[in-house]
Amino acid sequence: MTILVTGAAGFIGMHVCHALLNKGLKVIGIDNFNDYYSPKLKQDRVSTLVNHPSFAFDTVDIADYELLNTVFKKHAIKQVVHLAAQAGVRYSLKNPHAYGNSNLIGFTNILETSRQYQIEHLVFASSSSVYGSNVKIPFEESDNVDHPISLYAATKKANEVMAHSYAHLFGIPCTGLRFFTVYGPWGRPDMATWLFTEAILKGKPINVFNNGDLKRDFTYIDDIVEGVVRVLDHVPKANPVFDKQQPDPASSFAPYRLFNIGNHQPVALEVFIATLEQALGKKAIRNLLPMQDGDVYATYANTDRLQQAVGFSPNTELKVGLERFVKWYREYHQHP
Image (tube, one colour):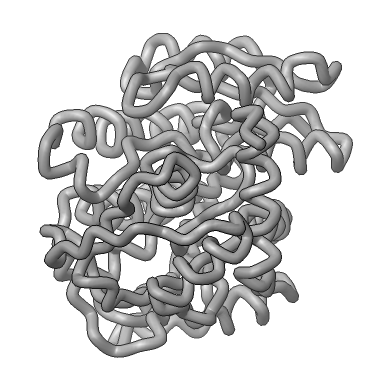
């Protein structure tokens, strides 16, 4: 079995590649090493993979259809884990075209190559951001998600309905995974765990939005990866009892499914900061700020469907996850 992982130099992508290789599978990784954050960090991630005999890597931008097509021509790819995307809510306010190129054009290219080469299962990354202005919690896959509050969220919602159309028209089994605030070793430097750790160690203030009155469903990377790998083996089929009078957005008459992957235990931002302070052995200096455009007050995943489908839902305690991140961060940056 040969599996293509897009965004293989990314935080989640690198970890997924390792997990698939550990299962004895052949993995083809692609990434474009864009400069949204440090390309060196991305290169360092890939360096942990390149010596594995069952791993091959190509530098490819998924927005380039011809180049992407050569990857499928070159390798007998059977399944795709699509993780490449322009990430970040706040950055979408500054550079919207990056989201159109990667998340819309790039995803169209992934769907087209999956159709052309008869991919057996396409698993793609969505986001908890699709829940937008929803206030009912916990968030369930059956909830309406027609009111995104950032362009990033809108592109992820678009990915879900685009995938459904290909599942219906061409019978491509598609599974979308709504990730909830992922953190852990090799994480992204634009996210709170890294930003706060860096600032606290340097004795600089951390930016605390909405004056700290926020809640997030922080999900440890190993749990995300476990969910991805299990779902990959769970190829969706058409739901024979799908009710078109009362359609369930997470299921379909086509081979299509949606799952939340979150820790289903939302944590107040102040609790998160206090837990990180404990792991670092150093107090934070807080710079209290108002709510940012595109942000949501709380995220909270209902993971019952994931549990029922694959027998797993995330469960790593925040204290454990943050201690592992801090240990990795100190080693990577050679910080005492």
